[in-house]
Length: 82
Image (cartoon, rainbow, N blue to C red; front, side, top):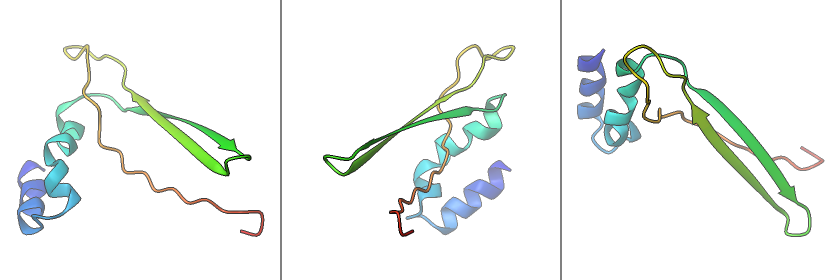
């Protein structure tokens, strides 16, 4: 897996994968599955939406503390008419 990810990053040096490869590899070096919590707040007066994301990953034997995982997120907002 490491060789494949490195080859993809080397073939695409300007990509997000190349830039975030050390963080991406945490998926292979850390045990457990991260949990993502999302909290959204819409301010009607200001017409703004604030989305706050946080992640956690429970401790596992030999890994009491986990570094953050790279988790891609796509967001789109729709009005009443879609």
